[in-house]
Image 1 (cartoon, helix red, strand yellow):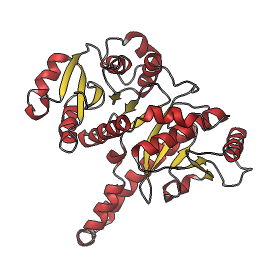
Image 2: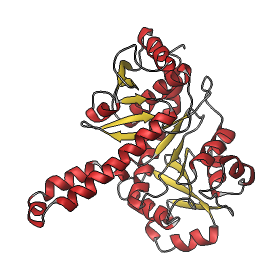
Image 3: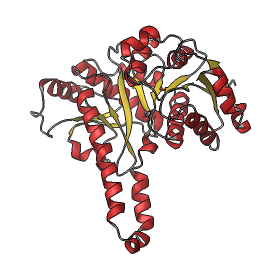
Length: 334
């Protein structure tokens, strides 16, 4: 246990829970045995489910939580009544230093509110951001904010740049990630006043932890020329949902449009293309700016997608993400 990455999982949230979560643990243990899982939920049910998988039992401990937060609950209502829920208890485990990181596929708003109540924010951060992975031509981007903050000022966006840089360095090998602000054009005069002020501050600072590359437009996010894309939560969420819908539209219609013969001849290329757009590989959004890490899995993903979010948790903890964020923040004074 001493050298394990201890992951607290809200085992009752998301579609097909807890079955897909237990299956995801089994999948993840095939390649990574450094993790230990605290599963929060209805104890009798979880014990019954896990008893079918002897290979994972030594890597799991069940913690009883009688309540479950529903997807249609308001964030504040869930936080007020949900102290016996699997979501609250899993976050509380991180607060009490029993776990290194918390993972849930449940109600995003409730998860954010509970996380802020229990874990607080890093000194100097007043708005945590939701960051996710986005495929590009070379590897992946980190994009934030994806919906936690509808309105942002220039300090928030600068904080997002610092935190996104730290996350990118934690997940991938890069000494100085390239950062860009999402905008409607590339010229310095384009965009609203918050974006223009943010551009001016980032351009004038001598940045040691990342390279500021100016603006980027939505149609160039996937080019692979930058590593971190920064925006407010409204724009980021719209961009994310648009990209997800476009990817699903392309893969479904491309397959339907091919004849049986052309599909056979193009199978390997089509499979590579489909694999690159597979949203399960990019599952696991991270709340950045809290004093301890929390990861949000897509509620509708399957066991494979949830296993990818477990892998993200492992990398975040081993890379000491919180310390990296704290180190990055002192380089920029808004």
